[in-house]
Image (cartoon, rainbow, N blue to C red; front, side, top):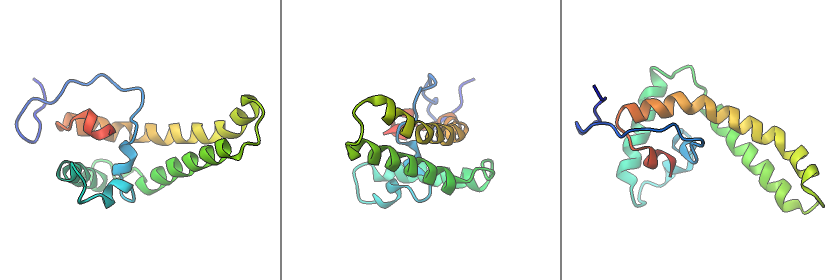
Length: 130
């Protein structure tokens, strides 16, 4: 039997996405928390409320603040490297950015079970990754 969404509709089918894109922005401290008047704010508020409940319970072992900060720091480090103009080829750039990209990827993967739980609860994967 398919899990039901909060509205009682069957949960959407999910093929595991390669990238959870901007899902981390829903975490406490994330920029989506500041967009209360934006289009889709009601849907996003439902997502954030569910995340907060899950982080307080089943996913309390996750350090959401640390995960969020790791992703933000990695993004800034990569952007700074790209904008520096110091690199004549991609080898030097790759060497500098690789540790940051790997740290970000590990942090995002820590979020995957939370992401999948929200989908099981009936949230649309497209909404979670916008």
